[in-house]
Image 1: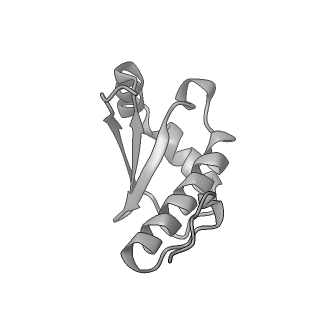
Image 2: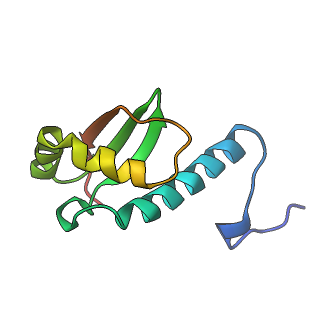
Image 3: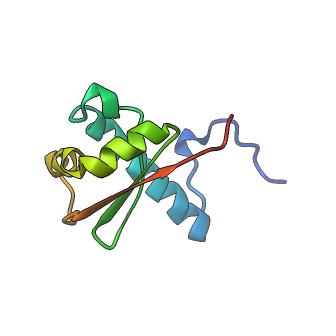
Length: 100
């Protein structure tokens, strides 16, 4: 019989699911580090992926997404402050319209 897991903080599954958990933990850590370098107006942004030198953020605020499109250097400079191994050249902001 399998052991019941009640605390997922130390849970490390194998295979693709394990890789997804590791990537999510790394992105959570980056989001915490980025929050120190973001202006207050940009704090609701959440980094969701880094792929091909592009950082993709998500927000629920359409006005903020528009503002970031006009001022991408704010996010690029914040990303430079965090020790990343890849050079981010482009920022994309997507709007999450799902309500919780």
